[in-house]
Length: 193
Ligand SMILES: CC(C)(COP(=O)(O)OP(=O)(O)OC[C@H]1O[C@@H](n2cnc3c(N)ncnc32)[C@H](O)[C@@H]1OP(=O)(O)O)[C@@H](O)C(=O)NCCC(=O)NCCS
Image (cartoon, rainbow, N blue to C red; front, side, top):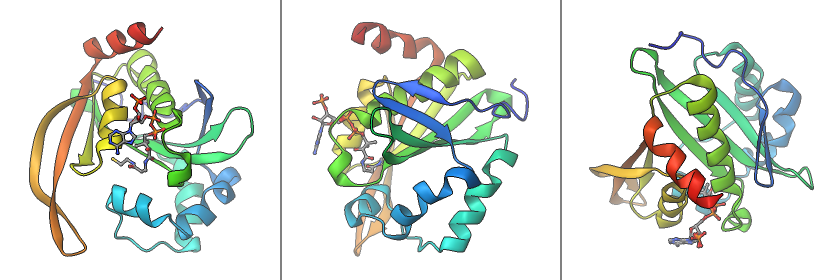
């Protein structure tokens, strides 16, 4: 069993070419414009129906440091300082040391360059080695094969399907469930060197 607030001291994480900084009022302006003008393909790939407001996003960002049962980061390019996207550990189940993961880069222009997988690897290292989680799980739409490939590179394995779980543009799509366990995550990391 984990404490109820394992993300209280959420650190900055460093990965291959990326820096992950806790979302807060201080860096809210790095992500608000992007979310307000969300890339339509990122919206589709993340199944985001929600329409955001600046006030709501600002309030969300400012309240993050007070929420110790989840961890929200902005992802930055380590060299240029450009904000690339965001990722989070959410839906903590402290009794079972289990959590869900989500990630999205800001634009399709940024995909396919290794940023997302590097961010995921940094989060998994923190989740398993620092926090002591037992399981990290995620949901990804069946049509999002790029994301499934990235998650697979980080060691996530497919464990099931929710059938016709997303309705997008009037069509139903399956959701793939993936997870990685503490004892599994070290293997792909070691293979990559
Ligand atoms: C999912 C995401 C975080 C992955 O990050 P990324 O930086 O693009 O991932 P990487 O560049 O490290 O790896 C992508 C891999 O997918 C492969 N790929 C690219 N397009 C692909 C496609 N259409 N189908 C299958 N694989 C594809 C790439 O070749 C690469 O694999 P490789 O390294 O073996 O060549 C990022 O693409 C993203 O944010 N996408 C938009 C939002 C989204 O889909 N979020 C996830 C919701 S579950």
